[in-house]
Image (cartoon, rainbow, N blue to C red; front, side, top):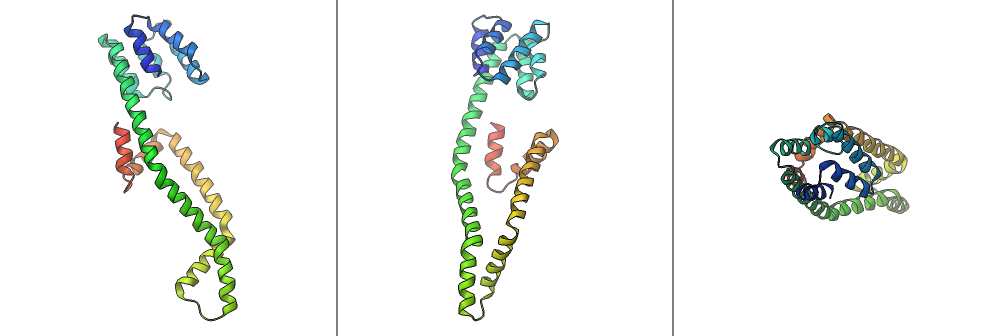
Length: 203
């Protein structure tokens, strides 16, 4: 929205600094508002728009900044901003479609995992007691399931701690630029979801 509105303002002949100030004033997100005000101050102090954006790498990625720099150099900043806005809108729309498509399989996997946990922790122990009352030798697969259920009952807290630790480790790695590249390469090569993720990244 910011990119589209700033493109319209520049195309209408409004000075860049004034456009940034107007958009910062209208911005409801406090963090982004502060970023825009800092960018405006940097531009007022003599920096180029691209250099001002480059100070906020977590908000404006290198592609965005480099294209803005090219637009400033060529005197076509309004055109570049309009194209950037269009590209971002398409990317956001595609990501929404992909997320919507992934909701069903992820939900199925979550429900299946929950069902297995309930079976191992609550249902199998009941059947184990029934089998013990009946007596006799149990088949090999049944013994395996019962043993697995016993382990799940005894060490469920270990599994919970491992999942929490894994989530924390994933977040830490993903926040590191080098770690994020490693994770991206891993996700890009996943058997089913890899091609979808690559398509989103390219878009």
